[in-house]
Image (cartoon, rainbow, N blue to C red; front, side):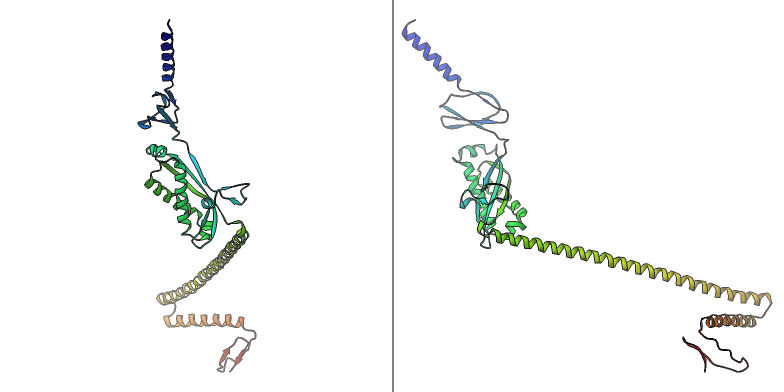
Length: 320
């Protein structure tokens, strides 16, 4: 074999080995984008074994579409009670609508969009930086329209909902190439110099809330006691009413029975109606006097042959 033949064989072997480097695999949870001579080849390659021109004629960009990624603006050091240490004054410190400074930590969870994958890969050199600036702008805009109390404690949940909607709308307009899952202000703290003052305000709010709750509990207790007394009074009045109605019905029934007895006597012929009625009225009169005299504190015996006016008082009987 001549030298030329050996060189040609060596060259062919090297060339074939070089061309075999164009084989590449894509895992099941990733897609691969091929750039051939700098031009993006559509569509993206799914999982499996593929071949294209070897490097540097072609470049392979693999992307995990299903991975949930996290982007943070501002970070803390130490435990959960540690002072917020921002990455930079522009990335974590924000001015509220009432001219107060708050240090915020914003957490963004997102996925790379399959529909706008090429925007994420090739529209800019640093897509995460674009997303960071977008979120920072949205946070600044919302916080600047809210008071410090709303951002710090009272309206943080509502603010997070509005922030997510705002960032999603801006991302759609700019087409960064990601799908936002959650944008959360998970921590809002005042600067270190005024942290003690904020703590005093928080304690005062807690005392106010506790006092209001105690007042509500006392009012509920008094309301329950008043309702119980009212029900007891109503029940007592209803019971007394039923008793009086029962007594009145008994008296009425007895009187009706007497009237019926008088009529029966008149019909049977034992007595005339007027005489029977007079006899009954005298008997009732005597029973009434007996009841009245039994309740009197003193008794007076009068001569029955002479007319006498008798006045009944609460203290005594006295003739007039």
